[in-house]
Each structure stands twice: as C-alpha cells, then as structure tokens.
Image (cartoon, rainbow, N blue to C red; front, side, top):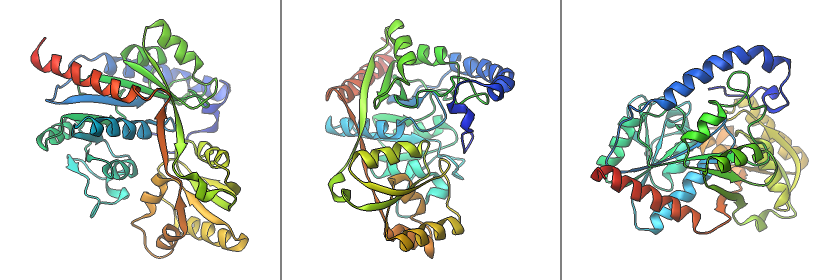
Amino acid sequence: MVSEAPPFWWKRPGLQSALLWPFGWIYGRVARRIMDNNARAPVDAAVICVGNFTVGGSGKTPTALALADAALARGLKPGFLSRGYGGGVRHAKLVDLSRDTARLVGDEPMLLAEKAMTAVSGDRVEGARLLVQEGCDLIIMDDGFQSARLVFDQALLVVDARRGVGNGRVLPAGPVRAPIIDQVRHADALVVVGEGPGADPMIRMAARAAKPVHLARLEPRDPHRFRGRNCMAFAAIGDPGKFFATLEAAGVRVAHSRGFPDHHHFADDEIADLLDEAELYGLDLITTSKDHVRLRSGHGRAAELVDRSEVLEIDLVFDSPHVAGAIIDAAMSASKRRLSGT
C-alpha cells in the first residue's frame, strides 16, 4: 500500500497514469482473480466487510463504528477485524488499549477497540477465528474487501461523494484497488458519504446491478465548543482536506492547516513545528481522533502535542436511521442460512 497518494491520482488521467496503465492492467487482472476466488474460509459468526474502492480516505472506519453501534443496540456482541496498517503484528491478537500502541497494532484498530473487541492479524481468517473463540457473533471487517480469504455475509463498498475514485485507474496508475466493475459485482451495497458528484458513476453502476445505495454523512460531535475559535488544524489521514472542510462547516476558524500522508507517524521536527507555530500565532491545536491516538504513546514534545491538541470527534450518520440495523439484520440472516446449510 502506498502511504502518500501521488497528486496525479486525483486529477483527470494524464501522461503519468497513461505510462503506468500497463502495470495497472496487470494489477487489476490479479485483483480480479483474487476476488473471484471461491475458496474462502467460513467462520461461525456473521461477517460484514466494510471496504472501499480506493486507497484510503473514504470513511470506512466511521462506517464500521456506526455498524457496531447498531449491533450493540440489538444485543449482539460485535468484534472488529483489522490487518492493522503499519503494525508489527503477524499472528492474531486482541488489541489491549492499556498496553498496545498505534505503532504496534495500527491507529485504526486502537480506535475500533474503544468501541468493541478488536483483533489484528495479517491472516484475517486467523483473526476471525480468534474473535469467534472470544464469543463474538458478528465480525465487522475494516477493509479487506479485495483480498480477504473469508466468506462475507454482507460486503459494503464506501465511497466519498466529493472525492470519488480519482482518475479511476487501477494501482499504480491511480488509486483504485481493483477494476471498479468487479468491485461493484462482488459488493452487496454501496455507501456514499457526503455530497458531491464524485460517486455518481459508481451509483449508476450499482443501480444497473440492482445493488442498494445508502447515503450517509459525517457529523461532528459537539462542534459548538470550537465555534469562533482560531485554530491550527493538522491531520494525517487519507483526505486531510475533508477534515479541514468539516471544521470550517462546523464554524471553526481554521487559520492554518497542515496535512500529512495517511497513517503518518510524526517526526520530532514536525511536532516541534506544530507546537511552535501554534504558540507563535496564539492558535488552538485541533486534530482527528486517529491522529490523536497515534500520538498518544509519544514522550517529550509528542506528549505535549497530545495534551495541547483537541479532537473533533466525527460520527457517520445514515440518511435513513434504519439502514445500519437493516445491514446487520441482513448479515445475521445470511449467516444463519450459511451455517444451517439452507
């Protein structure tokens, strides 16, 4: 996976993407073969996979958290399954918030574990079986749509309505993980986050395939406490611009912003620059929950940055309040049919 998306991925196809197109064609053929592989391992629990068309920045982790809330409301015991971006875990383990760090297990698993039991594993089948052993009756996969070896009972593809799929080309010619038509073919539903025309081609494709399209939005939690304040915002996520736009929409005056690559671990000089600039201009520091959890295990000025930074918590809210529950119910029903052999 590429840690920093090349800018040309998010522009109209040009010379760079054209030169890389043959490699993307090969990558796409391999991805299609993997996705078409029917030799997937079943587990004794319902499995929902939350994936995205592209590398990073769509809103799949907030979607996974929203589904967990719906599952908990139904009295289920959900568990998250993650590969753990950049983590050093090879064999399946449960995330321990009191001992683990983002460097070990990844930043997203640390966030997910605050909601429900979370397993991290390079082998997702092993991780799923660990969650089943721990009593989970619903497994929510954060990513893994294009490569997982598990049987899915529901597979969702999340797409950002503003950003879409960039130039629409497959890696490395663009940000797309597998041919779009094949991804839609293997999905049970599409989740479109936000407003904008970027997702329109995928919506039309899903409609032609009779796949449901669910609309959702990212809503700041308690944004009033930030209104009218002059802030310096920083984020190392798939699309930092979306975070900055969310702040401004919530009434926050973003005097300065700094974007970094997704999953970025801040260097000492970057941390010092953020602190010194905020001090110089009298700005309040504000960041994402994912960045905050990544910084949390630091010492010295990193610990100072954690103490001085406030977090804008964001929730994914479906336009229809019944969607998340309906997805859970569909997965549980499919799982029962699968496990009973009917």
